[in-house]
Image 1 (cartoon, rainbow, N blue to C red):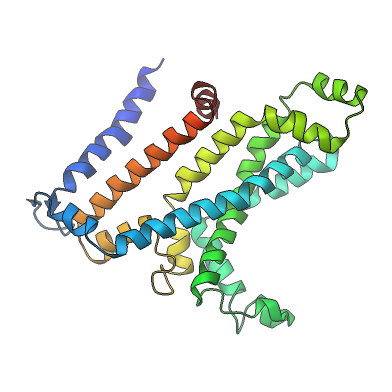
Image 2: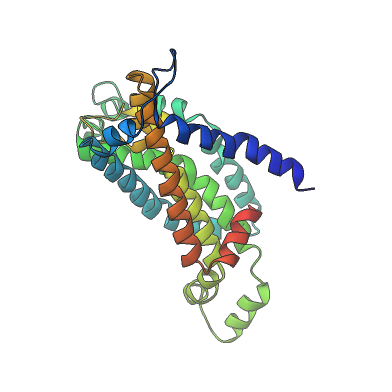
Length: 281
């Protein structure tokens, strides 16, 4: 029963990863012959002054999007776990952003946030008439907002399902003891969702390492290098500068960083329980 999944994993994950690791020790422009280059690609990447900035931007997007998505997803998941009929309709409508292409979302927001012809100028809202993608701080905030707008529905669905698995008897006992809704949330709901929070956070963190198309269409890494995340840096080196060796080295760095973060979150969540819940999703 496990064999087909194992074959797929080896064919589409392990073998490509080994190939990328081997490619990081070569010199290749993507078209011609592949020539061994030793540690030249790694030396070029690790000594590049732009690498710390790309890592910093990646962790900024990761931390800010996690801090923005987690509480909203949790609260919305608890709300949508109710039994009222209209909440089911809201859940369906709320899930729509996740079905859209990231490139299409980026194009839409780029048009809406245009200071001259966007939503703010059309409605006469001064707050929205800003150079959202031209100022470093605003550009980073915009990227975080757009990412959160798309993926909050997914994590809301995770929390919604987890809340519905909490035994109703816990809430009934709390009501008999005179606990209000706020007390029930902090004393019952949150503790029961510990593993779900870890699983959701792991998906957010690992997903943040791969953001490329949304940032590329929205800001192209600008202004300057304000939104040039590591995945975008990999694309620019590999497919714009035709430096597949350094790009492969960055890809390996992304895998290592993602693995370390996933292991750290797994340990934080108590290891086995959080890991099994994540696998079940």
